[in-house]
Length: 81
Image (tube, rainbow, N blue to C red; front, top):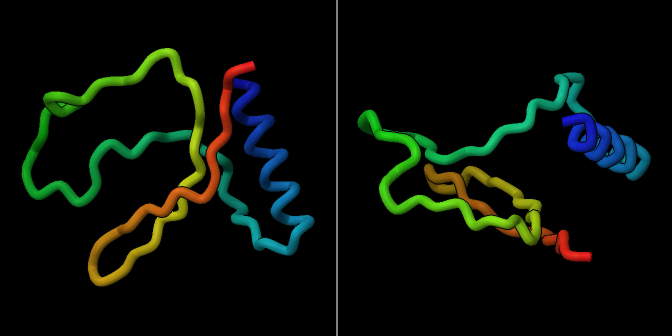
C-alpha cells in the first residue's frame, strides 16, 4: 500500500540523515513466518492466528549469533488513537 511505502521512504530518509548507510535495494514488505525449515510445512502452521484488529507494530533487530537468528524488539508503536 502507498502509505507503507511512504513510511518506508520516510524511515530510510531519516536513517540516512542520521548517518545510517542505506541499501540501494527497493523496499519489499514481507512477513517472515518460518525460517530455516528442515521439512515441508503447511502454512499457516497449526495454531497460528492473527490477532485482529492490529493494535501495534514492532521494530525488531535480527542478529545471527551462534548459528541462530535472534530477534530483539527495539521499539513498538501503538496504532490506537
